[in-house]
Length: 74
Image (tube, one colour):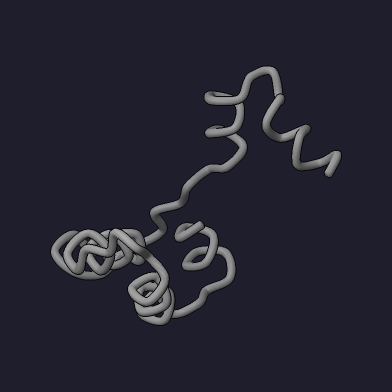
């Protein structure tokens, strides 16, 4: 989701990090803000375009399309 929000919708990652800070029960400052910053391409490793390829992940982890079909047919 973070990749989609940052790279596809071009939303400010800081708003998403703040939102997750409010919503998560097991919230951890370093993990939350660090991961959002990493994905957004800022901070200690500022490479941009860290894109999460949803199609690749889906084919790797749901080869038979059981999970995807569950949501398509809902």
